Amino acid sequence: MLDIILKLYSFISQIWASLSQEQKDSICQAFVDLMDKAFREFFKANAGAAQ
Image (cartoon, rainbow, N blue to C red; front, side, top):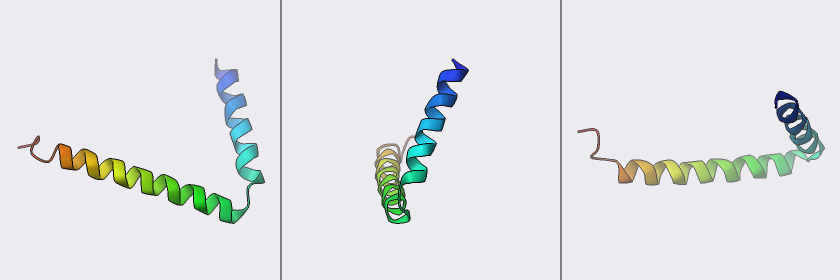
């Protein structure tokens, strides 16, 4: 199982290393935008839950 995880990590690392800096920046920005939207919706939906 650990071997499969390490091979997957290695594969993703090779793909990431082959990308240009512009492509990496674009992917990172898309991920940040996605997480920002998800967190905002989550906290909007649960705004009164802590009280």
